[in-house]
Length: 436
Figure 1 (cartoon, rainbow, N blue to C red):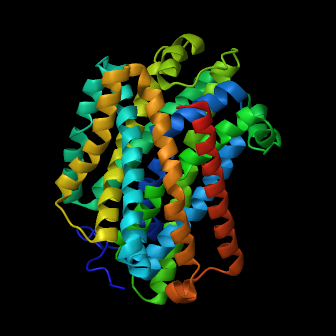
Figure 2 (cartoon, one colour):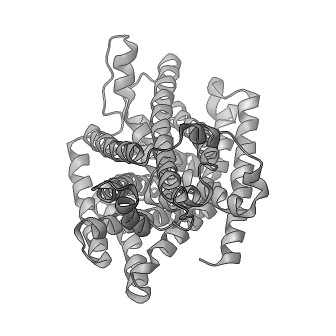
Figure 3 (cartoon, rainbow, N blue to C red):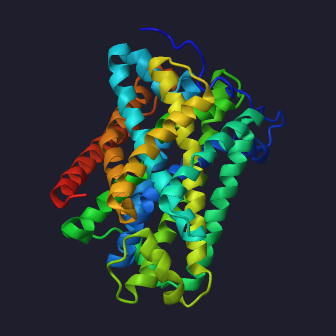
């Protein structure tokens, strides 16, 4: 087995200093950032359709699924950040190091497919938002999304903290928009709280199960596991046992806070849909464009639809930043290929833009929902290729040393990996039965 030749994301590796003072809050602020870059993948446009459909059709009942999937995400992201901090290798590099080149290449291809599918969802989401806000054709919106590639490159040259700051600002924009939407829609507090309690009907009702699996499948993103194991290494923490232990602690807090915000935003989308559409008897609303056109007249509040589209644009732009970073990580980690950052980002974006342009040109603008659905199915198919190696590596005493988790956490990881694989396989079967 060969050792990776360079650190993950070498241009920003260990580039952020930590405060010398032992203040908890100062250190937490210094470690804050990577969790938010990861969190944007849990509120990307691919999640919106399932959240909208779940709320309009089943009221608040599927909030428990959002809670469960978010807890699973917190667990897996903790494994990811711990792998990066303890070993000094990201997940892609670890696969190459411990599985060899023969396994690394197919795993790399699977990761690239997942990133392309995720980027497809972001491109479509951003293009739909541009269409709704500025009334530009979807094809024009798709082409405009290429510009953020240049913007991201400029930010990264200035320092990784600039990327983190922009992502946090965009998350704040999304949260503010949905906070106002929740105030406008006046949901029933008792119903919302009851929705977070798991109900047997989620499993026994095939229609609920279908959307529930869709929410689960759209929540945990494969590229986030590669991304998190890399970007936690941007901090210059001590490389001894105490330094790594402290880094794991603070990075876990950062991740859990950020993913809690992501869970709240996903829940807000479903709550808004339930309080607006389900309450009025509109149980058929599942498309982003349809929700946009109905919000202002149904809520009776001018600007409600605009806030919704603005949040969608922020979500789409946010996710493109993290997707292109993940693309760089998997290419360098799996196959040790380094190409200029601008060409890597442009390549990733072109892979997403080309199918979007072809489908919209041939099938019309109404095909965007089917493209979003297809992107989520592709992501579901690739997820286990990231989760299983992650659980394997972090559960190995040979790899993690004294940082290996206790047996109950390792067992929980394998149960979760099996559950994700089984649910995503079932989602795939359901999708092929019903068509895309």
